[in-house]
Image (cartoon, rainbow over all chains, first blue to last red; front, side, top):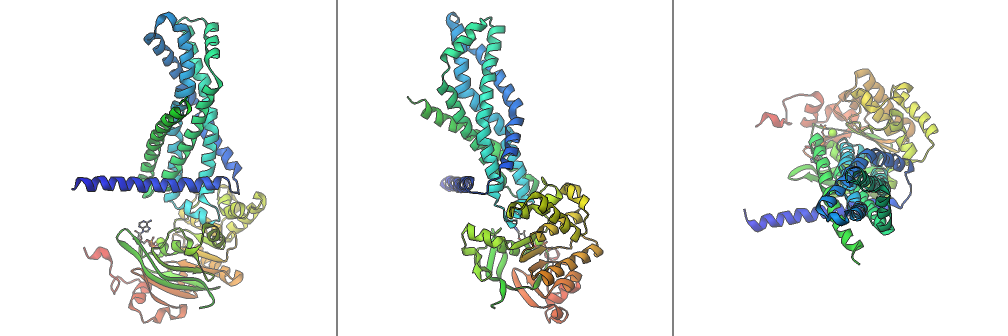
Length: 257
Length: 257
Ligand SMILES: Nc1ncnc2c1ncn2[C@@H]1O[C@H](COP(=O)(O)OP(=O)(O)OP(=O)(O)O)[C@@H](O)[C@H]1O
Ligand SMILES: [Mg+2]
């Protein structure tokens, strides 16, 4: 087949998909601010997205903080390591690793769950049934998930920050024999509000990506169990890639000066 | 026709290269019960989904109360949808909600009714389809196929809509329950003045509920007339269908490879 025809087709498919996604996002966001509001559903989703993701996110953060401390110690200049380890762990976790790894872990859990649930609702015509019962599916299904994810991800990442720093502290004081008081002082001296804040802003954006990708692929799934399976995989893959890409963009914007 | 509640004019729909609706013309007079019969896969479900706006036709016009629904914005369309109740072929119950919440859904979400009051109505509607209040507390997955169908029916009539679509209301039911359901549909039309459009393969149901009958074949309405005329329609297709004969003008595609 003609090489250019293949390229052309790929580009066209991609553009069509981006168009459909933009439309989907527009539909969803426009319903966020228009009544009626389903507060009960938002609370329910916050529980499912936030609370039940805590163990996964906390464990990830703890081990990452510990591993980071070891790497900095082994790779760095041992002369100055005591202050460097504490500082770099704190900055690394709050600015990058907390939000990114937290986001990726939640993407795996939550994007998949949302895509599977809405995908099943799509193929069993439950989403169509909503329309016939005077309930807008965007408002009833998408908005609560998106709002809940945008609100809970920063909270989750804040917890991850604390636990990640604790992971570094435990490894630093137990394995590397640092002085606990000095470690805490170094962390507190070098960590600024902006560092934590930048991570939490990122987390909110990642929450949006996670929920939207789950909903988008769930809404557009077709063809029974296999289609739902495909939607689930696509949701996780696209959410993860978008999180990493968005993280790069936000890092370059937030830390440009 | 001035008393037309619903009117389809030259409606076309294809999926890929497969033509499903090929110029449907159909009128449902106000306060009457129209039954559409036709072979499996001839596009009956697609046709009513076009009226509900779940599927967008490629060409043609659809009028509800004289207004073209295909030209409406989403707000106007939602207002029109409030007049409708719909029983889906596969029931399409919300599996995350209890049976009574399914039935009360249109009241609680669509009409903002208090849960307590809505529950009373839901239980009353369940009784109408022969299900006791204890069924209301179960989840859809705990019901038999026929029970799910009846819950779907209760949900479709819960808000006392002006227009009700029944997609195969008696399929999967025993003959006695089927008759109860037929009576229920007749009641809707007689007592509440509802306009109904039903799809069925069940000839005893046709004879019981229809004011008018239409037959769809290869994406077109090939015959339409009052119920009394169905036995001497003078149409070979209708004759073959109502007598369930394998031989006749309607060939099964499976027979010719
Ligand atoms: N979303 C869709 N995408 C692609 N094809 C579809 C879709 N929905 C329906 N079809 C096709 O349209 C045709 C008509 O389907 P429809 O469900 O309307 O049949 P039906 O007349 O209701 O049949 P039955 O009596 O078996 O319910 C079928 O051949 C089906 O494969
Ligand atoms: Mg059908």
